[in-house]
Length: 297
Image (cartoon, rainbow, N blue to C red; front, side, top):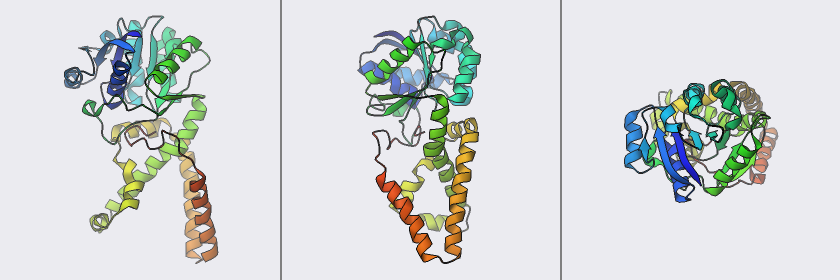
């Protein structure tokens, strides 16, 4: 049981974490802060937080658990803002979908309190954002990836694992390098492709007419293009090297398919499609694989 959660960012992810902790009776009090005072007040009205703090520092003062649920680009500024409110007993986590940049931001921002930070990435979300859509069950059955570094206190890694497990998540631990490479391939690049596809479609003269004829295949393929623009701008830039590497690999694969089509190579095209079809059929989704667009990263 934690005495106080200091919640920085009262949106979908942060709000759902607070509600999950309350439902599991793992926290006595939640003090929240958001950049927008109206958002913080709305979180209080909805019962997501108990106290609305006027600053990030005041939100974490006296907290033994802190969660940063802000865009990854805002991480370093927030870590700096809360540094002097972090005690030696405080567990600090985030929910960012890139980890290398957030770890560096925490190192610069938290300084002497950096060992208290356990980087976390819950693979969960919705296509809608905002505190109104927060729900206690958002992380139930979902994977949460922890990426501690050598200087992270082992006791805090254990506490972080217990927190996420306590609200129903399945915890996985890996290095931040492995995390960022993997999610560039299975999440960040698919979002980039979805954004590009929708932009290419709607830029065409007959784009609206094409959309009127779209069915389930279009719905499934394009779903993640509805994701939050600010969040995904930050994610793609934060992990750009890994994403661009994956993008080049897909561009080559697309070039190969186009070459087979141009040559009218019936057998070659069928073999290439069959290879993809078999690989997709062999994939066994885990419980996190249907997480929606807002934080499916």
